[in-house]
Length: 294
Image 1 (cartoon, helix red, strand yellow):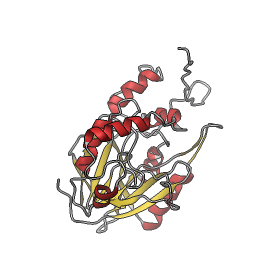
Image 2: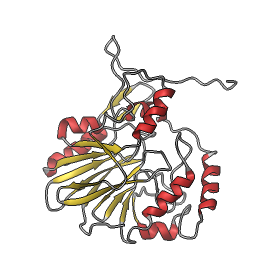
Image 3: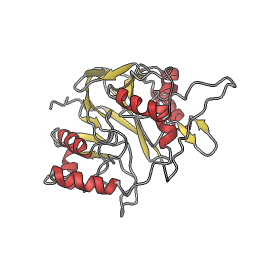
């Protein structure tokens, strides 16, 4: 798989409340940039949303005189709300997602009993990438790769010598993403990861989350293909597909639901927008009720 030799300037913004890392990725030869996986602050107890995390990104963009061309989402996040529409309104850029967002919208449209007004065709986004689609950040060549497994719509973005794989991989000492969300598939995840590991060893990987593996005191989110291949605790070289699938499925069975899953999915499947306001001028998020005996 070809990776361009140019090295983008990558600035990370860590949101400790959700352990999410957002990125501003700049073409060093121009002021063009992309923003990847931005965060909208949200308190589910009060229903209050704010833009503290997104405003940090805006302040940086403004201070550096940057021009966003792209607002890239690696997948429909279950652990934070996207701030992409807010950033687009204030700084510009095209909002992009993988085309399999339609699969996610179809499933959760049914789960949340959305009516016909909720489009399930991905039209909330400006661009829907397919596997292998080429684009550019300034003069830098970039490519979208479909890497399903964590969710059906997961994309990795290759920009110069840097790759942004979303939740597909974590730091080598923490492992890999869960696959127990609707449409998730441990076997697909293994194959997506092996595809990424065929990139040149020196390729930089910038991860979407870090939870500080046991024994590590500091958060971290940058690694390399070489480090993943040699030391990833779940999927380093030598770990076969069947062993990985067994481990991943057993591990997923022990995990609890992410704290923001229900509000995050309802917002992110709408490209970061809240549901339409009702006749009292207020937007509402639904909470499906499941009785244990049902």
